[in-house]
Image (cartoon, rainbow, N blue to C red; front, side):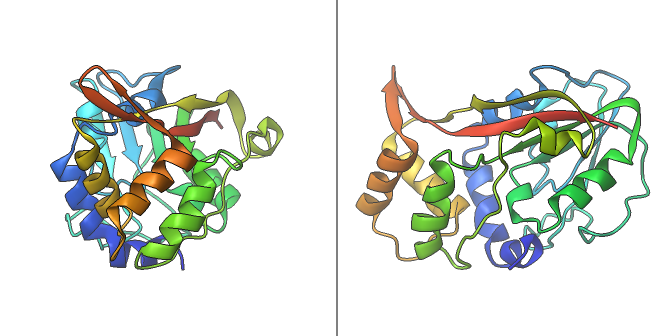
Length: 234
C-alpha cells in the first residue's frame, strides 16, 4: 500500500490530530531549516504537505505551494501522483517531511523534486532513520493496531546514497521531540495521528516508552522523536 492509499484511509484522523495539537511537532518542522532557512521573497514547495502544516513555521513573505499525494486529508490541497512531473517551479526551497518512507521509488522522487529547484536552491528532507527504534515501533506496534498496517522503507544515514541524487550540504539524525501538556494528550495525539483502532492506551504508553522514550520536563511531556534530516542541492 503506497502513500496515496494509506492516507485515503488515515488522512482525516491524521489531520484532526494536527488540528487539535498544532504545536506538538514544532521541533520536527523547525529542524528542517537548521542550516538554510527560507526568507522573504522566496518560493517554497511543500510536497507532500498533508493539511499545510508547514506554513506557520515560515517567515512572512515566503510564498508556499502545498501539494499532496492523497485526497484523504480532505483539506482542498491539490493532489498529484508521486511519479508525475511537477511543472509549477522553479522553487528556492522544497520540503519533503515524514513521507518518503511510504514512497517506493525514493531516489526517483527526490530527483524529480531537485529538478524543480532554482540554481542554488535546497531540497530539505526529514524522515525516519533505519535502525532508530522508531522504525520498529511503526512497523511493529503501529502496524498491528492501525487501519492499514505499516511497512516503511526507512532512510539510512548514508551520504553516498544521497550524493548519487544530488549534492549533500547537510545530513544527520537529529532530536525533534514532540511536546505535550500531559501523557493523556500524548496518547490521544498518537492514537489519531497513526490511525489506531481498538488500541489499549496502556499498551500504547508502554510501546512509546520502550521504543521511542518520553520524559517530563517541567510541566510538559516530551516524546523523544528523532528524524534523519538531509539538505540537497541539484
